[in-house]
Length: 249
Image (cartoon, rainbow, N blue to C red):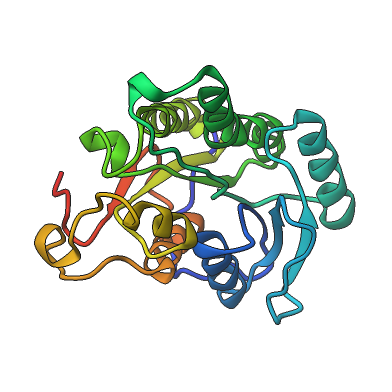
């Protein structure tokens, strides 16, 4: 059994991190937070290009729904850097349709990105981290999976609920190998994806969020940095609520 180190300051100097869904919103803020903490970050997304203004970050187009693309990305990162210390899973998409209006195609699309987009990288990178004897994985879940939705449809709620369960399984399987796995469950965060929610029946920040505002991407990014860094060396298998007090669990 790997004896995990005692917690230390939230620095990531010399560490190699991969971030999915990194072109905008929470993913982009996470890339910048990890780079600021000293990590070398491989930022990935479905778009062709993205710019972060720092040489600590390199960008690679990547489709999280493809296992072959995942394997190629992991091989490329290992060939270049020799290790992977952190994996942050931010890729996601949302649907608002109620169950009785949803289609099989919609369910497949939501599950492919939100669930298999976590399964594929975790499946490929878990053995790498286990061989190293250390590594941290953090996936984006959602408050929606804990309260039955905010303004999202059931396919999104189901996918995020599955992510919560998956990462707890990974945490148990990885604990003796030094592989950590946790989830951040954001409340409403002002991102392009949330903009599609606010066009519908979304909660009022003042009426539903005790801290009086919607979240910003940086609020989530700093929590992700904590879970990726040595500051969280005695935390695994957690679902960390970051929601302005909207859910006190």
